[in-house]
Figure 1 (cartoon, rainbow over the protein chains, first blue to last red):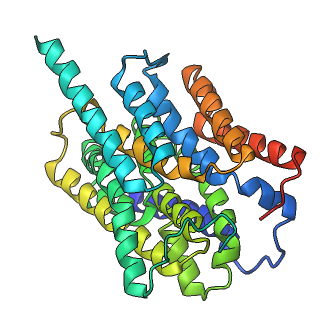
Figure 2: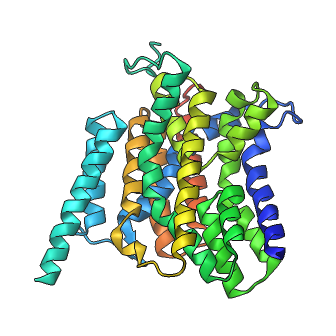
Figure 3: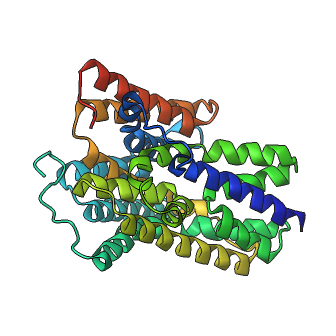
Length: 109
Length: 243
């Protein structure tokens, strides 16, 4: 039962982080230099999420014949050529699926 | 228009179209996190939480990394203070998202601000930034529906996990993370339109890989900040205007 209390406290922490700068209590406008820095939030944070998935597994660098590495590089190339999100994701997933299928079949054989 | 923002795509014409677009855009990410939703529900049951407590985690906390880490903290130490400090450290990146949307969201009524904040996840942030990059403006209808769609799917997945209980196979071996990586790549790469963003991305790649390899602190937070600073420095030194 006490855990419900913990959950509510955790929820207030996550909500506070998400709401913090939406609050109208603080009326100041963000400093232009802060705005310059914040422009890089999306590319930097999202990249810090995808890069380790593509390049690292279990504490070591992926080899060049790794399914994550190859499909990741192909997805990056596809994203450079095609400005639409969905086709790029589909290309990446097909590539990953095929590589996984064939590497696992080889393992079984 | 004509600022290099609009690539010739016309923005949706009605609220209903924004909503439809939001559902389509967030769908790949929502589907990719289903395994983690199931894992959150199933692990919570395995660690001795009741079904209601487990579902409330997803209904109220609504943050996959926080939910999984909190179960770990409870299992390992049971220390309550570390439960809350872990929650704050993992959630701190949402402060950045909140700051990025500040100018767009601040003028909205309080109920809207709270709803958008409640549904503000990595995934919602990613698709809304892609929307902004494509059309050059923020839409609260788009943001809310994207966030809410993700919420419904996340909670349904948790429910399935609770229902199945502790009997799930090893989900990590299926490679669902790749779907998330592919989606983020597809969202980030088209936003690379200047040297400063390119520098920010390359630096974030190197920093995140090194910090993950050598298990230094919180790799996600560290690499994000290093990537942002690299972009900032390049932008400042080359005298780019602040848009």
